[in-house]
Image (tube, rainbow, N blue to C red; front, side, top):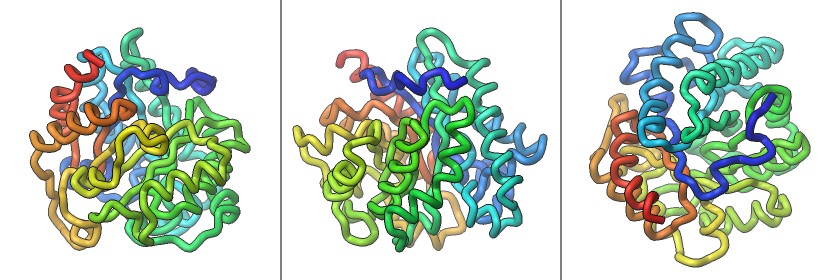
Length: 317
């Protein structure tokens, strides 16, 4: 049974951590082969699950040591039908993997959760296409497509789902609608280019406000991910309602553009200390941002720096 589905603890004001750039860490730091950048393939074999546990257990001790909550993502960002078929997984096998991915993080929750470190199980859902290129789906098509994963997570121990690395409003709306139909809490996380806009030119404000309108405000909250803070800091405005709906940040380590990162065959870990300072500035300027994690190029070192920079601020808030 889902533990927090009806009352997500991260919406109540405490500070929560999350993991870093799962796929980049698994490829560049743990030396694994992930076809099509798909970490879900590891869930299908014993040695792969061991590698995922190794990855997760670099982050969970940071949260427990500090007495902070943790939003624990499944390795399912690519585990949707089109990506699965591309790699050779049919719907039945893919469905089993999505459920097994939840079981894996549920076992980790049993091991690492404490009264001061609640661990929320989050079913991660990525874009149907390339996260760096604009998709062309209507919201209803996105709803129907992503319902495959949403419905699986609704049958599992997952507490919520997240639409991660969304670069169009329609896809974010579609996942939120599928989650609402399945009675699953949902977060929608947009990614932006270096100008603070979605790849199709939509402003972050317009994306969030349009999603709110199309879904009657059903998402539990919004996030920004897969962009360096320098890319979206200028897009935020203090004391505006849409900004207060952003509860989390999972930034890239590198300040490079998506195009530059996409063409790179090396890992850019950026300036770890500077990233921590930028998170501290964000949490001070925008107190609603209480879920802190990383995206491409980040690992447990970045999360430790972020935690070190932000926890004193959080404790005083």
